[in-house]
View 1 (cartoon, rainbow, N blue to C red):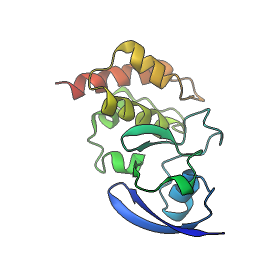
View 2 (cartoon, helix red, strand yellow; view 1 turned 180 degrees about the horizontal axis):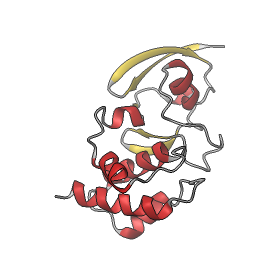
View 3 (cartoon, rainbow, N blue to C red; view 1 turned 30 degrees about the horizontal axis):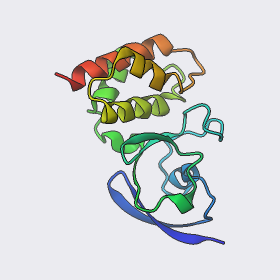
Length: 155
């Protein structure tokens, strides 16, 4: 049975009618047309669907609508509308994407880490980023961009 949910996504309030067990991912993509968040596996293993929930990197494919009350959600579209976030700038500078499918999840994972730790260690970066799969294997460019973003955040 559908219920009404009010979400704060990218700083804007949205009211949607959805089943309580519907994943947040589908609400973002199908109801709010925020298609930067990708479906990869549906079981929180790949990271393509990563968004920030209250500043923390979260796999949106396993967050049920019934558990979204009071959450602040940020998608790749809301990270920085003009692409000026240090993570976005680093990704562009290093030319990270190949196919690009995982990149929103990669960037949101790093943005979540930087929200939690302003100066993460290389080990913290590796641990966070290892959880997001890249079909094209651009891991070296991802790590390079991650280091540039950390450096830019701490200037």
